Image: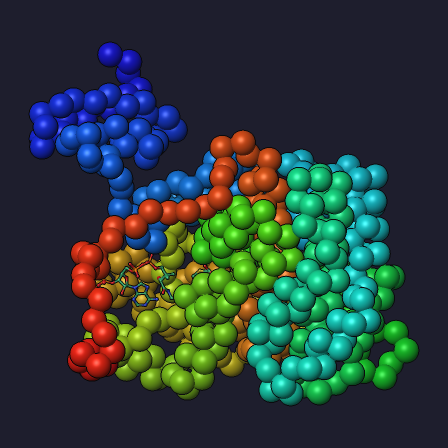
Length: 433
Ligand code: CMC
């Protein structure tokens, strides 16, 4: 019998089956042959929330959660954060290799020349309520771009796909900045092509009446590093949404809007905003114990802690902690850092957190850093979505080119009624809710 196989005995029928094992996995479809009789549909797996199911093959991002390793296209995240710019990393994610100097120059030129939004976009934005959350505006405006670029529907045309990818990476900072300016009631600022990706984003956020915006270099670099750290993270909730929605061959604006919607939730990218709310609620270092007791008693979660994959530490959180120190040298220390450090100190010793392998994740320190840089908490998840757009689009490209991928369509275990008699309205009893 071949070595790389699995033998399964079905005790219901005493039949034995041999299925191949490849890359530590068996194919779920190989289980379908396991039946109790001709009427039986065949065996399926049940895996709510995909705890143990690979939904694709990917060569983009590698994570070893037990060892705390994260690599993009084989390069350790620490090396990329130290030596690259975000646009260089976006190129790496999309094309599989780091760009040469010439390729990078052209790439930066292309992205820079697609930062401008169609003037009608301003009108969509103006329609939002003054108090609208920036993430809601961001998601809706990305989706609205589908109406501006109807040709994006041609997802099987590689040149067309690349054109939309460049547009999306170029325009997400502009949409993010407009969402912020709308929320605070400031006029929108147009992009400045003399500036780098992050400097231009800062310009569109914070330029007031000065003729030319000059970004603080340490803040611009720290933001670029944060963008690198957030660029991709294999099959997380929002990337799974991107692939799932993209599998129906919808256009990339609608697929990115769906992915960004998934990111907005507090258990995913929305956690960074929640961390700040939690630190505000705790109030002072002295109250940390009391708060943690509440969490251990089952009242809420420690936001910014825990991860589905990382069960040792999140390597991004380590880099952020280091990078935050550089930012604080310019901005002064965020007073919330004291509370965060105390939370981390206690959690790393406390049985509840140690047993469950709960460590600070990327969102734990990023919010404190963003706040010190001058961002309001409502903007934090939008800041996550900007770089992740490059990751979502890389995963989307891979999906479209993968001959094994079809429309995503999971199975279910039906637990409802068997067929029943129709009840006329006058004979129905009220359902108590
Ligand atoms: N605080 C307290 N307890 C926790 C936490 C937390 N942050 N996270 C998990 N637990 C407990 C959980 O209650 C469970 O305990 P028990 O075994 O007694 O029922 C155990 O740890 C295992 O948790 P789980 O919910 O099965 O873990 P998961 O892999 O399904 O969830 C997670 C991962 C990230 C959603 C979760 O840890 C969490 O909700 N964390 C807080 C939100 C957060 O920081 N999210 C950002 C994630 S990283 C960036 C990103 O993806 O955007």
